[in-house]
Amino acid sequence: MQGAPIVKRYGLEALPLAYLILGEGGAVSYVSQTRPLPLNKPEIVVAYALAAQYMGFRFVYLEGGSGGIPVPPHIIKAVKENVEIPVIVGGGIRSRELATRAVASGADIIVTGTIVEEATSVYDTIRSIIEGIEEGVKLRAQGCRGARRSLITRESLP
Image 1 (cartoon, one colour):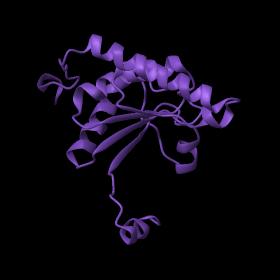
Image 2: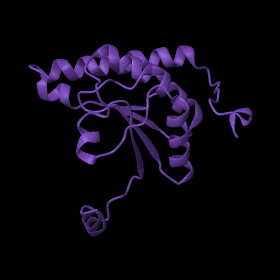
Image 3: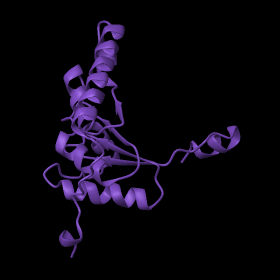
Image 4: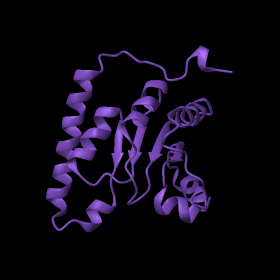
């Protein structure tokens, strides 16, 4: 809220982003006193992501929590298959392999933070993550030829 006047003053573009905290939620869940969405209920995460899209959000961020458990591939995939807006995934992405997995599962953007703070060689660490992203893009292109399967169907609705 305190940043809104600055956005207005400088004529910055506001980017509406739905921030969904999942799993254990890590520090962000603790500080914000929120209850994270359960990882064993992908349909709930999808419903929240769809609600965000329908309310006009332009991005959906799936947050596993800083230092927490990375968002599982099946959750990323389920959300990606059901929304038309970009999917951002962050929290717990500490390796090339985890970056590859997130992107291959459907993440359009990944967010890393702690890994850079803890790295002995920031360049090598970022290079490794970028290589993982590139690998994930290739894997996603091989596995997804445009077909979208919806987790939420007319039959699953009450």
